[in-house]
Amino acid sequence: MRVVKVAEFVFQIDGREVTITKWEDVPAEFDHIIKFIPDPIPEEHTEEDHEQMALWNDRLQELMEKERARSN
Image (tube, rainbow, N blue to C red):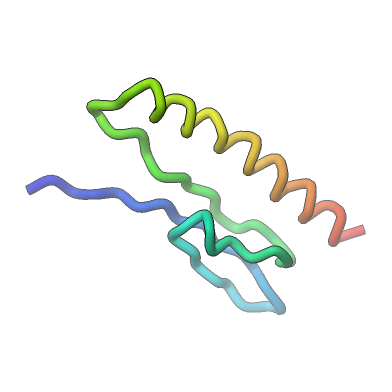
């Protein structure tokens, strides 16, 4: 049986930890990023999968920028 790994994003919002499993559901406002684990690339993957994986660093940087702005 193959185990399917799913993305996990955990944020602190108003003192509560909120877990998200889809990038589309990431909140616009949050206090802190607790965990950022994007969807893993499949063992058998395409060039498109590589392009998608390349986006994750930019997304993390964007979230970190929001976090820094909010804490100032």
